[in-house]
Length: 160
Image (cartoon, rainbow, N blue to C red; front, side):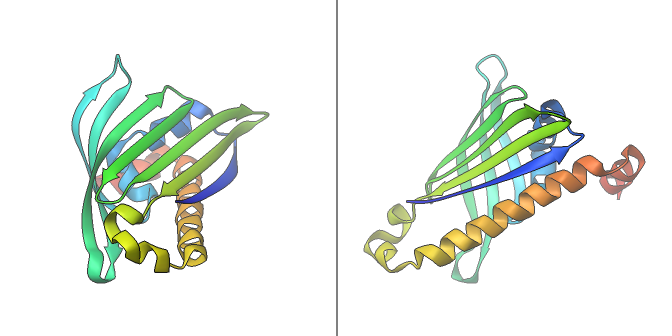
């Protein structure tokens, strides 16, 4: 299991604003670098869970893979997306109100053994950790950039 955590402080942003950006299925594809598309299969607002399919671009021999999983959340506080196949991945976003902004913690847990079997032992763990860290850092930067857009610019980006 490979686990990577990154944190950011988003000045002037509330947990509600960040939660809205992260919980927008269409916006997630703009925030997470490898996500090409997100489909919502079902959603239960009372139970605070949903079934999602994400299409992740892994490149190379893997191309784009379909990942179906369960999304759970606590409004304005946290989001957890668990995928079991083809690769077990958990992505956890934790939002904490801070003075003048919000602390955002993003954690990814990745288990390559189910997909690679015994070959997983030959995976360079540090390189994969570095890759995941870069992905999370890009996502945190994208969230900050999205929240700092003016409403007029955001509307044009959606309309284009």
